[in-house]
Image 1 (tube, rainbow, N blue to C red):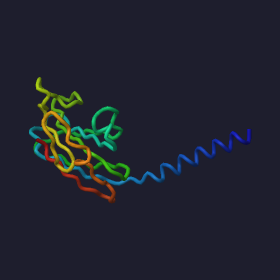
Image 2 (cartoon, rainbow, N blue to C red):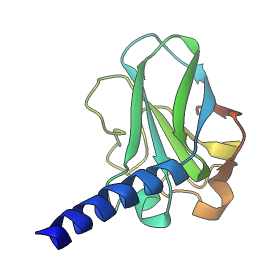
Image 3 (spheres, rainbow, N blue to C red):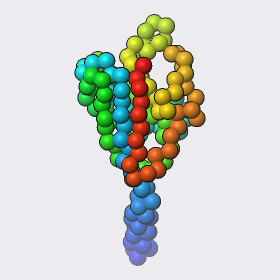
Image 4 (cartoon, rainbow, N blue to C red):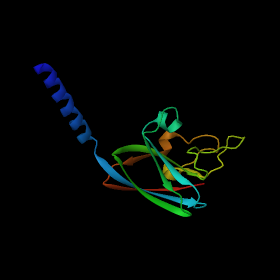
Length: 143
């Protein structure tokens, strides 16, 4: 019984230590070129290629009410490297709608304001940013 208690205490202490190492910072995200105040601005913060490509779920996903022209959001997240994907979900279905040619019909954008072709994501490395200060300013222009 003593060993079980020791194991439980060890596990709890490990979890507290692990979360203490996960230093959190603020990302101030400014999204520009919003066409209307309809729907939401969807934000996906991707920490690896699989999240960015959509092959696994994105753990840091947020939405804010759309406002014509610009929306600014403050998000508290762990320090680290992120690829930011943003789109204007005008019909509030939580997906970026595409036309028959597989081109987006809702406005979208990426960190570093880097765009690939309309039918493909840009390279993950081109949109990767380091969120490492107490407050980090990121500006994304939708197209």
